[in-house]
Length: 169
Image (cartoon, rainbow, N blue to C red; front, side, top):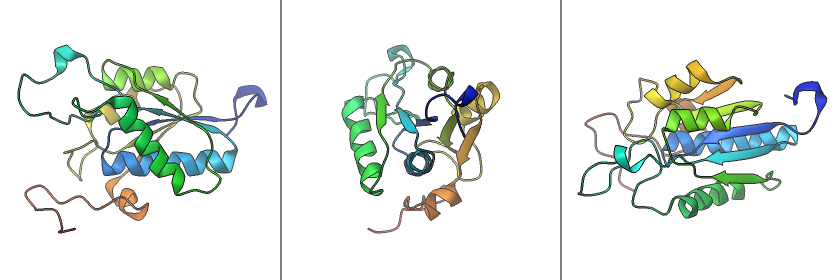
């Protein structure tokens, strides 16, 4: 994987939303960038306030939780993923505001690869989430999707099936 014309190092954009699949996607992207001597751009999209839920407890919607400081949360996730790889490449952290699919596709416009988890928080194991589907349709670069099974093999905690309780831990 190289930049067109052999110029520069590869750029891998990865969507980060706090889900196990996104955590695994981040770890995969960092390992891939280390192999290719590339860089990673970790993108955690904040939805527009108009699309946020009304007053009440914070809700996770496939983006960083509305109540968390997005950049600090993203930085913590990136630091944890980089700590697992001794020669981790540089990671640029970006927290745009907007529609998650639009912002991820826009971020990946000049990238060599877009890496996403199969679904965000609360997603179903057997389906690819709406944001991932939209990115698959619209991205101009190759897209790697990390599934639930791959996330578990890459060290993300297993997600309970719908209606099941999480394992004690």
